[in-house]
Image (cartoon, rainbow over all chains, first blue to last red):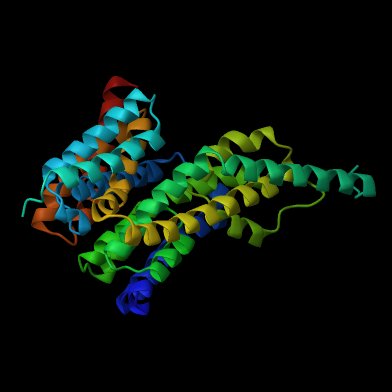
Length: 118
Length: 253
């Protein structure tokens, strides 16, 4: 394994620094502003909605139009694994752990059974 | 009573020790297992996208909130600009701010003999994320005020170590197991959050944001790959927020 593979390419560090700064800014401002903010106020409810929508959009995009390694699997594989995960999740009384196990196992099996659609 | 008697100090130290042990035990239960599993997914994503082990570990150590880390790696892997990445991560993680605001009063506690130093709060804030916040909000009120910072520090530090181990574990695992299993590990990321959404469907505004985001995310990706995610968050989130507000006004609920 090459060192470059371990550390990743050089262009990751600036985005990492920016991500770290904006993330800590949220936490640090929480301490600094503390009691002067209403955590249940309209601004934070809006922020919560935006964060939720963004994450939901990312999750759906990763399942429907994956750009990275998951692009090697067909949509039926990803849809089937998602269904398996959610099914097991409900059957086990909303166990995130068992749902995750079913999702990983489902995708691994289906990816082996159904050849990639290119 | 407020003067530090030796016996009082000894009692406090004993309480703190018990709190630390309890925190580590609780962290290594279900919260640790689930976080470890989800960071296995992040570690394998870091490998398969070429993000790298070092960068993945630094992301976990400095970000310590999976949604923002996923947005970072995914956007980086499609070559999004620094501005797009910064804005997406900021929008994802600003939700941590109200968590810090609501948890802090419990941590500051009411220990008049030894107030928690300010830098200590800034340090503890770094390990406030969904899992630690939810469990601490439930657990801290049950503890005596003087042992709360110790409990939370131990709880956060334990889970911090667990996520770093998960990141490294996922990275190495992805290189060892057969390709379909590696893909399964990468698939952990979206599937994990899909289930977290399903657990948390009590607030109407969030359900709306979730539904709009799920539909808009893939569609906008086709139109604008690098800024689609940002537009999804702002547009779908704002629509959900406005509709929820209108609904509340009309129904009075």
